[in-house]
Amino acid sequence: MATLDPTAGAGTNPGKPVFLMTGAAGSIGSEVSKALSRDYQVVGLDLDCSGYDWPCRTMDISDETSVSETLDEIAGPYGRKQKNARRRSLRALIVQQ
Image 1 (cartoon, rainbow, N blue to C red):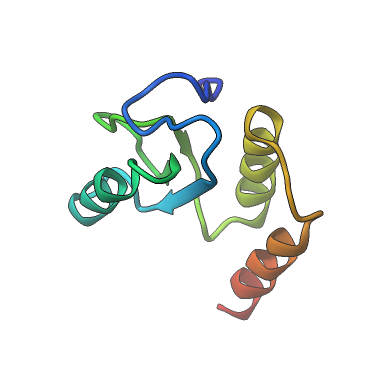
Image 2: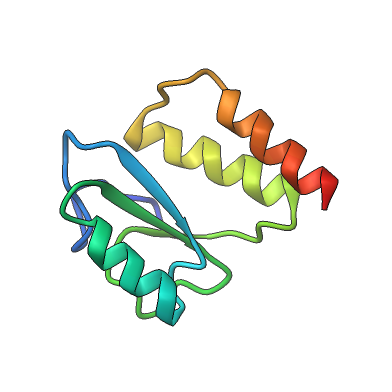
């Protein structure tokens, strides 16, 4: 797992809100990331990040531990605005599935 660097990659846009893109390395995810990269700091999340042009973190969205570790890692370089509110929502979504 590579360390996320908010200053590296085509989707970086310091000072802009962070957008977490699940399924980032796929065809649709790559195109959506490209479209959003003008207005957001795009961080990809996928099972395999190879070939992805933006900062990306390997993550399994169906694994609560993987999600929790990923959100903690992203919060380091990118910051955290809402204290775990979104993390709780994401965990609730995973548990419901």
